[in-house]
Image (cartoon, rainbow, N blue to C red; front, side, top):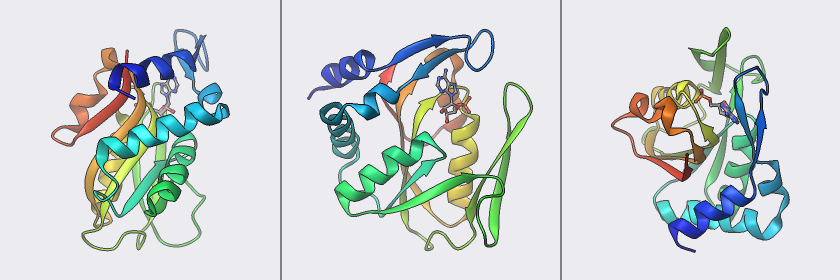
Length: 177
Ligand code: AMP
């Protein structure tokens, strides 16, 4: 599938939900995309093809929807999977990154020893909005000793300019709106 076909596939399987979880937010519900087997497979294949299956050793997914992407990419490529978790879920020593949300603050964590020094890490999530989540995740992976080889999302909300916060790292979106 070419870029336009993949973007159309994502558009066709996303439901825009106004005012969720707060007034003024247009929530991109991608659960129909995950629920459609052939579409899900095409999306995973497109992500793997973009990066090349030999370009990373580990794929990191951001809790929770990023886990669904990372697990599938890990299985398809034989790469390891790293769960970037919300605060308080991991049982051993962690690295922590906090960042501002629209309302309040959020914290993400990885185990301190989750990544071998120099391991190449692809990071995936469902939506890039303001970039706070991605910035925290990428910094955690780097502090843990990983080398970011790319960051992919299904949907980038370009008007929020999250991409600028992640420069000069490679940011890839199947659909940009
Ligand atoms: P941000 O940190 O602002 O880039 O937000 C990204 C995170 O919040 C991602 O993990 C998304 O799952 C979620 N998110 C933010 N905005 C939306 C939106 N409009 N629709 C769906 N998910 C969103």
